[in-house]
Amino acid sequence: MKTRPPQARRQRETLKECAGCSLVNSVHRGSHPRLHILPYWPTVLRFILTNASRRVAGSVTMQPMMSPDTYSLLDQQSGTWHYGLIARWWSEFNKAESNELDYYRSAIRKFGEPVVDLGCGTGRLLVPLAADGLDIDGIDISADMIAAAKAQLRTPRTGQLWVQALHELRLDRTYRTAFMCGVLGIGGSRDHDREALRRACQHLEPGGALLVTHQLPYDGEEGWSDWLPGHRAGYPPPWPDEGDRRRTADGDEIELLSRVAEFDPLQQLIVLEMRARLWHDGSVAKEESYSLKSCLYFAQEVLSMLSDAGFGEVVVEGDYTRMPATADDGNVIFVAKR
Image (cartoon, rainbow, N blue to C red):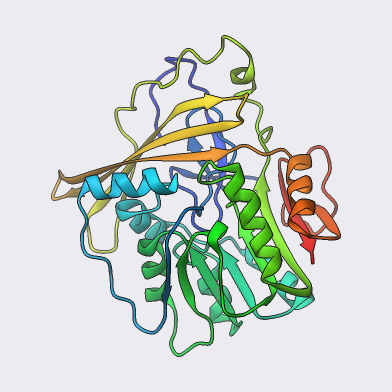
């Protein structure tokens, strides 16, 4: 994503794209699709912890067009921005990488089916895994994202899609494998995160595993000075003049602009703001504004949370390597067995 020159010390930090969560300019660093976003931001990831609860089965009825004020209320309630034009962006432009899919396929072979994608978004991971014939369910806070995922799935199939907050998770079966890709922290509530992990554990069969893919706060050299006293006077910076603009399948264009609104190192909390514009015939036909809150977690915090949630053995692996993580890994996967 283009940003204006360094006013308010705007370093660029890259963010990991997980199952539905990557937003702005996808770039590649190493083997991962990333996002450029404004200073310090460890993991935009996808999906969301708040309070909706509705099952989507069979055919999907798309949500009626909502006003910008309605979408603003949704993001305030959920702490995230995965609605409207942003959900459409996810569906059109965010695709799984082969190394990610290989990793999850291997994990499912090891731990078994059925499988649940906790924070599935528009199905970036779920859709290709379901195409393999796997028995996989998907959960997300956003009805817009779930509808987009359903539209891509073959029918008939065994798995279901549910609109539900992870901290209110209540499903009618248990699982051998569950995964949360870039979800932990999204929504900005530590209490909700702890409850989401506890409920994920409850929905696993004995011997089943939860895989939590997570980007650590120190993944990237830039941005660390923002943790120091007196180094955050530039928040929020001005909006960039232009963002990442891409053409959709129907010929319209969607443009995303983002900035960091707040960063609190004491609370380990960041707030991002996003503007999404729909362009039609060279003019802006609609604009939506959102904010996203996220808690920042270090590895030892996550290990403690998993233990408190009821998990037993937990292994920390390097990002999609299937090898033990090292101090040089900024992206890790916690493999927690019940």
